Image 1 (spheres, rainbow, N blue to C red):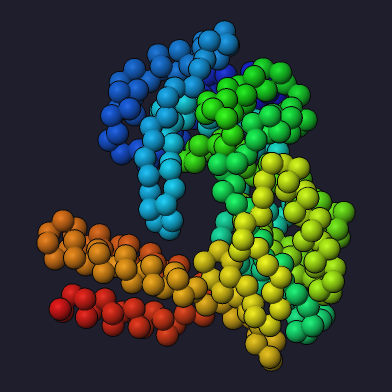
Image 2: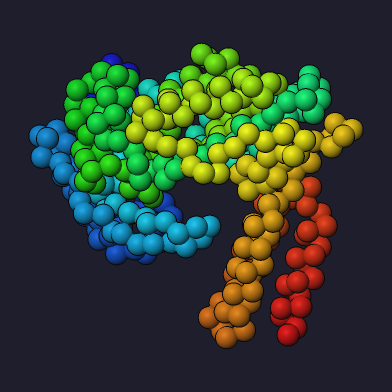
Length: 345
């Protein structure tokens, strides 16, 4: 952050654009777009700066591809130049300006947060709820239907305009919003993550402020409330439906009110409280099946020489580290035996 400069001047500052370039090429490996830009990096940064200052900047066409794990999604990857512009905009203006707007239990896309942070917050909230209510309470588990694909551009622009006073920054924000037609934001872009965080931030404040819900958390489009009375849970869920509708969104069919004793599936784990008050976190059954399927495919690739055994165990050990954050010791031993058998067969 550069003191004494306007927000837009921070975005177009050469030093900030250079740092954005360094971040953009981090992890890019030997991609053609990053290699090509690196040859003329300083001149390329000057060109980005000039195009932004003269308002001749435009967002390039996205590179579109499909991923199938954990579920099928269309990813739209922006050009290397657009990644630099996004980094400078997000890192120097949007994130510093908007981070104070996000509640503590909005878990996604922020430094120091993430799925494990969300799971730990949920664990603490379930423990406190059990100490206060025992099993005599309820969980509202909700999910937004196709969240990224249904974000309304005009509503998003109104929200951005409310928080961003600098008109030149707002101009650049609109460039990225309008880089896709109709509704929805492109998955796979830094600025889409920031926009998505902000789009539902009003819902967070509505639930924790106006509704007064104490035990609440959200990871992007997946959120929960822990409440004492089922009658109020139904009323609050109805109010949440209406608020989501005002944003052009709908809750999906998986949204439900669950008895507290059943626990909750959130961020890949099933978290529940035992009758003696201990909070248990187990990997979801569907995630176990997905892991077995994935490692079976990877072992086949190792056997036919298309993947090294070192790369396999790099992925497998990362998964083992992930499940270590739950009560999954037995599962870890079971998977070790499963993988050993796959290599023996």
